[in-house]
Image (cartoon, rainbow, N blue to C red):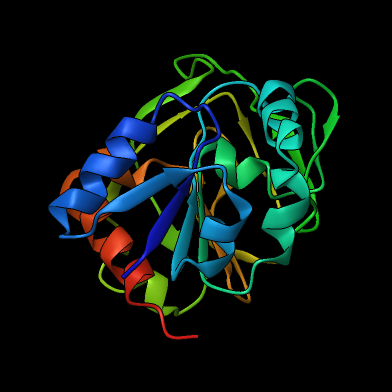
Length: 197
């Protein structure tokens, strides 16, 4: 299986590559359009600020390529947020694969922002991507989130409900980091690699 990992400059790229290796898959870190278009699976990782990440993608026209992909695509953390229409982080237009916007999380007493650490997900739909992971703990690091989406597949709570998984056609994405989420994360990545289109 050929898995293209989009070189978006995110700090989690190494972790994603190692997580794939543990599943017996050699990911290819790339910005090459041909490599991405012909891959069996595409992963869009991301850590950092939305405006900077969109600028990096735009430099190589990846912001135009990614929405046209037809194979299974997985966005991770900031990679998920960039697939929406707009992010309040940097007041930036994103790729618009999913309708909706990314908002800043609300800090509360004993719930500082960014949200960092382990949290559960509650599936909203019965999907192959989420098989075997309901109620499992995943690792989150984010100060912005999608609060509602017509494509929500799972949600989590951190003083307020937010969308933790979205799925629309061949595109899926997680707000958490499956590559840093132990057995539950490995199961979700394995589910993604096994998706039938």
